[in-house]
Image (cartoon, rainbow, N blue to C red):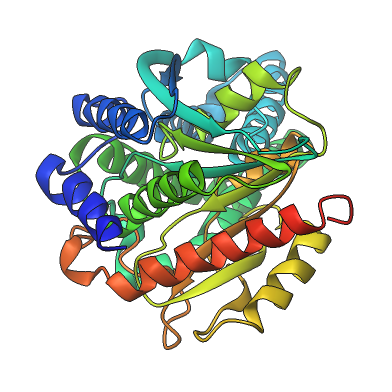
Length: 391
């Protein structure tokens, strides 16, 4: 099991930061490809186009909202009606893109290349189930929103942004009928809010320091590699296992979206996805719910199974609701596949440790945590394989 720590060390310290679409992200994918080959597996690498950043959507929306709020009073009546329609459009884009249901804007902003790597272990006997173990390869920048004192309120902040877009529309509509000073002041306040929001999004994409991403998410890549090596030598009876290493998760879960969109015809409708994210610090946890504007809930049968497994292990493995943020399971849920996210969190903390922080390096990674998460996932898979028709 010492290999798990070595994998994390190589990714976060030898390679360093692996920002989405960067050369280091590609180097990491190439290394994963070769490592899977060393397990006598036949990995596949698939390249795809992606927007430069998830923040490019926000910059577009904030800039448009800023200009509308600032100049709406100067527009002719007909133009005011036109911009009311634009505001509804911005609300629609924000909600759809933030919940990973992409609009045409997604395709317009595709500018850079990324890649997914995956490999499968076939069962010894008749195949009855297919399990995907997913871990994202890339790391993030340490933007101001992820400051330790601010990030705990991130969900609330995103809801404020969304409802502020609604407020722009309502304020614009009311101003058509009641041209009072109050609505003018609301416009001024909103324009200032969007100016600051645009700068924060711009800073996070272009100016913030990169994180080495030891916990987020080299830890899960290391655990998944370890699991693929184990199952390549100890093949399940009835379950095919695919290790899926996705790119550009920090761009808005693009890698998993592109994989599911490309393979949706061939993926078994009853396939199970186990998403590993931030598995290097604390005790194993499995997520009952996650998400920001919208809540996503794990498959109930998998939660029951995880609870059964947690009673049989020597370490702590709790079911939790993720208080801030999301994982790739959000996208998987949108595609109507079953799944559950697994991570690790210290008992004394509510938030994900070192999430998008420059201190997210190997110093904080616990070997025992990596081993416990690996053991927990392994036991879940074995239990599924034992009773494949009931899960």
